[in-house]
Image (tube, rainbow, N blue to C red; front, side, top):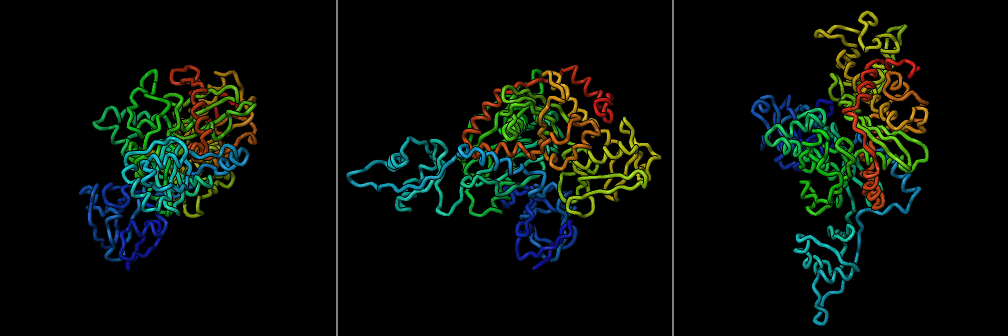
Length: 600
């Protein structure tokens, strides 16, 4: 028995098992999309002290091997060891990943008739054949079901043996008229909802019989290695040999790693359906569809409504004939994630005008009510999701999520997730910092540091930084990046309002979705000119509505059909060639805005 110490100061005991198995036993789930077989090369960890025995170094370069990297699934401690787990490998049920579960609960509590999952279980007793009744086994099954059903060739091959081995008692699941799979008597019927974000991937495992999310997992989207946003990834896909295949494999491996994680944590779960939500480019890449023309004017996707393809087509580590439903897109830059958001928020049925904002790598906006819906998209960049900022990180343990500054005493207070030492800044923390530094006179209206205004402003590597701790700071470049992101979001909102002839005061409710929305200080977001200057009580946080919408579609055939209708109902306005948008964007590149009256 040997001890394993991680770079997070955790100490675990390994009992003749791999590093991966030890981590899993103690609730740390590394990405291992091959299920720990050593064939994906994704569970790399660095051994900094001690000796391990490694059976394989698949996917590890000679340089990495020399530096101490090993595959966690193929490496066994031979002494006490210390390891470094890269942040990107840790997949846990984080605050950023979760849709607000009460949204889903409330919809089905208020409308119980909507609860009708996309698959249903059946338990039938079938009359065995006789000389007098020699119908074929499948015909006998169809007659017992009471309707014509489709069955995959793979399942037909085992049908006869299964019926006889189970004494003609059969438990199985149907998706409408399709036979999906047999069930053991104690197996639970689960499905998974997936949100493919540009920066993160989130997955929920859903109990279809109870209508509940039972577990969540998330990780960074590994496509980040090939570009921060959809445009750079489209360019990578079309300009590099096998670029599309590389991007597709990256995200499919991420999803398979998350599937493996939730299957380990939820024993005896039978995953029989998948619902997938993402922006148009992410959905195209997931299915291996060339996104080339999304980038080229007039920005047209290959398709908006997807056929019901199978897990084998998607390369998911599930039974091959598990259906995979993809939320429909509206246009090249309004995808299934926004259709999901409209579905989850309910703005499509409101009498009054509502505004829906999804704050992520892209800032998508929808305005409307039960009679009309208009939408647009603007590129905010990934800074609010932890990328592109020196000390940026997701809303996980160690992230600064709130910040206040005392001008008179020249000191600040921070709130760190987990109450430990700060190791980075999440999106809500970034907004807090910029707001506080601006309102307290540490940065000016252009976002530039006033070097003599605080003892925490220091020149490091030829740039000014506001130093929060030894590990954490915000630089001038970071502030500039945040201002560009907030300007893009506000310009998208204000332009869309002008296009439909609505003012800010006409908005009844503002629904905010996205990874950090729940922790956002509305007043401070308004202070920096990111959100409309309206009463704070009109803002409602919804969490990850892309994941929520995908979950709703799993649990309701009617809501799934409604999602298809909403995608066709929404009117898309392209901002890329809009002079009005560019004027609004340039005006918003100040704190809070060049037109101060808007934020009085």
